[in-house]
Length: 363
Image (cartoon, rainbow, N blue to C red):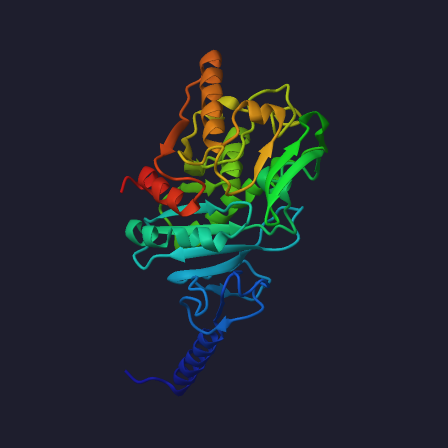
């Protein structure tokens, strides 16, 4: 078959453009001890590990005005554009796509802790993803745009005022924060379309469309602050698109009391709370047996009510699941929530990810 001159020219031009595009791909090391300014130093021109600290590199993408997602095999990141009116910048999503991924693969969304280091949480799942043929998505919400209350509490309120009565830090890192729950002041809550959870379903639908995935639901894992997001998501507005939720090592929980103000209880939320739908969701409260009151990693919020549930994450998880069971029995509601304890593990997101993988995928 003869190839026309025009076709040959078109092929050469396309090849040149693709080659140029490939050459423009650059990678950077996430923030670590040698680089406190993300994306400012240590530019690499191929994927791999940082020569200085050994961390997996992340792809540096320029922000574009379209919604195109480019997810190649391996690690990378892309910008996701939410349609929430209260957001004014794209969300950086870190991903890992195993080479074995097919249109029948599962999507797992991973929500990081208070440090917002989504790249580290993504990396926890790389070997697991290769074995399980799972696509990992880890959205990152920056601290300068989403403070403690906006991130931990799903961006349910534009502003939450609270009085800090005392705080305790180690080497400049906040470890304990004491608040007077009687002085919590809530603004008018956002509609659910402005909550962070709105982004998660949108992101899944966009990726599902991109790969023409067959599965209609995705799984979710979150650790520490990410676990707080997940349990409140299930409590307040669960998604029909999520199959299993795992909330690992949450620092505190929103109780079912409609007398206590949010986030201690449910008072202050204008929209109705659909507890029957919440309690039938497949949610596991996963806690390391060493994440108790002696654990020093992570930041703990303290108040009169929270401390009555326990001083450590293990004790608080036990108290919360006990209260949930009592509530379900009293209201005659079927409960699908579970409590699982991980032996020999404290506040460690990598070890909790390994335990979660066994529960999610039975492998």
